[in-house]
Length: 66
Image (cartoon, rainbow, N blue to C red; front, side, top):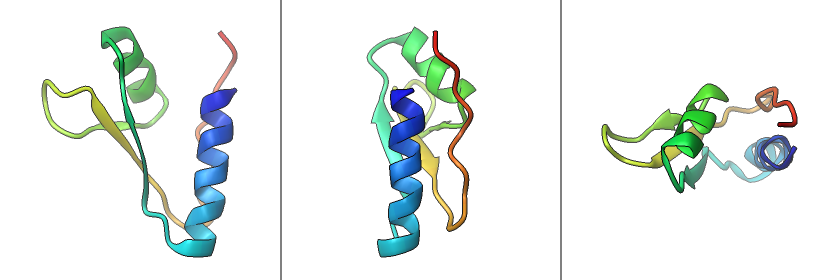
């Protein structure tokens, strides 16, 4: 739910002030897989940095509680 809330807020900001992406750094490979599963893109191979590009009127990724 935290990821859904963060992306929802970021999407709202994208419409208001021009935010272009939400970034995160995965703490381990499992977290990296979680982010990628939910639509984040790895910035470069071997990196744990990921980005979720934002566009106006974009809906946040669907997440389920684990």
